[in-house]
Amino acid sequence: MRTLTVPLPGREYDILIRPGLLPQAGGYICSVVPQARKVALVTDSHVAPLYGETVAHSLARAGFQVETFVVPAGEQSKCSKQLARLWSSFAQFGLTRTDCVVALGGGVVGDLAGFAAATILRGVALIQIPTTLLAQVDSSVGGKVAIDLPEGKNLAGTFYQPRLVLMDPEVLGTLPHETFADGMAEVIKYGCIADQGFLEFLSQNPSRSAIMAHIDQVLYTCCRIKAEVVAEDELDTGRRMILNFGHTLGHAYELAGHYTTYTHGQAVAAGMVRAAQLGTALGLTPAHLAPDIAQLVEAFGLPTAIPCSQADYAAAIGLDKKGAGSSLSLILLDRPGHALAYPILKQQLLEML
Ligand code: GLY
Image 1 (cartoon, rainbow, N blue to C red):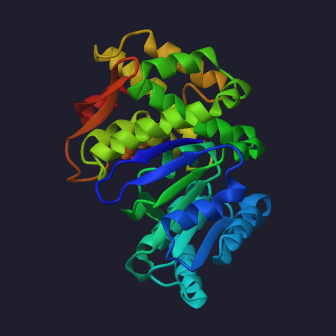
Image 2: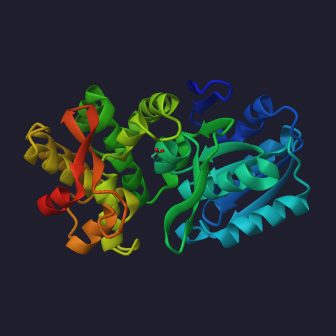
């Protein structure tokens, strides 16, 4: 078992990483919320048939009264309708402030169930059990919970830290290749922004099977970096912004594909390569880094570039909105394994793009 602590004063929590953890989830959850009697287990229509019963049985064996709430799989469930449905379901289940919500699934389930837990009864305990690589290395850690609005992604949300994060690497075995690759974009990001040794390790292990042979260490390294960054800047006003490496331009690529053509990981992969190229053009990023990152993302089946119009770039950097400010902080690399926020005029950035 590998254990990490996210050291937020008064709200610290553990991340437990171990193959075969899922059937023992109930015991670990009981140890962090011993006063809870009821557990609202939220999952989606893909994950429920794979792991829903295992977790529900484990919770029941630990003495909890469990009810499972299944949302349709997919980003469209991160919406106000599903949120309101969960609120009503929790109320009908008789959830109290000392009970808890368990989010079993990928980023959509974690964000939606997390936001529901943060807001029902003004907040009940939340446990994250992420089942995708992306959710394990990113969205389940750090407390960002949200739903999408018709006006944009993640527009309604809050910061709400879980009490515990349980990661069972064995669940990654059932992921489709594209979903695994999606998570690899974020894994590569951690190497780029914070750990040169890890970046070199990824370059030497450029395949799913090689990564899976070291998956405990990979998850531990990514979560260690994220935990450090979140502990320093929980509310995302400073250092946490380095986690956005590849994301500003990635947002443009997601826009270009109307959020359907490219997955988040594909957009971030191309965004990291483009950001490294821009960094080199600005005299900050060593010239070898863009091709190095391109080679790595390509090895995992991720794109190195995505066609994008000036209008989508402008929208992604906020140049299309009046009064949104004339500059932004672009996350760039000044060396392998180190990122910084680089202030740049939006107009200058658009011209470079
Ligand atoms: N996914 C970026 C963050 O948690 O800040």
